[in-house]
Length: 228
Image (cartoon, rainbow, N blue to C red; front, top):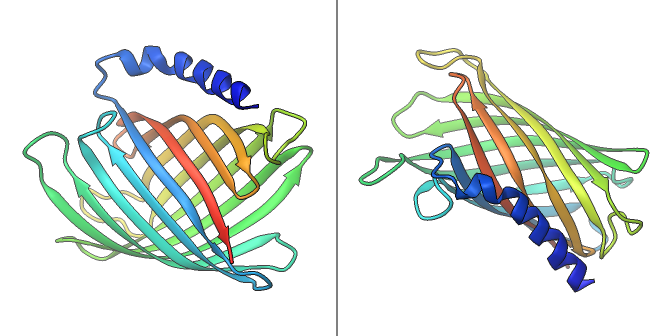
């Protein structure tokens, strides 16, 4: 099985090589951890998240995002609700660069469903944003996550799957230089279930801003929940 994992990820990396090899200012990379703590016989849990985002493949920081929250799961597993906080450090491209900070409070609802063998998650998020030297504003986000199993093991340990998502961002207020439409993210990749509570993914995300500027992000993510 380890050999199969190496072959699958090697093939994916070779397919991405022409994109990565180019001297492409429109290519960045995000390295992400999504996890948390789940308590045995409790509907409550803790969300933990860290994202190291680069203007390039590595070394030129775009954003450092740290997010946490208190989660509540419905007993049947059909939905999770989160109240959380995020801290974001953003830097302009190149050196020297400008840095600004943001504190963010958010409320989230994650609804789960199954269609045939695919797993679908609908995520609704409402954010209150406190950006340094800017007016207070809010933002609405909707994301549809689709995971399609590629092997008989489906989403059990040893199973491969295709993760796809699209997320749209809508600002709650229209201000100078800020339109209602903020951005859209479209992602596709390859995932592997290492253990019951541990998954890894690699893929590409295309982010389009409200000024029609678009940038491709190479994404590596680790998904891990601890059980207590």
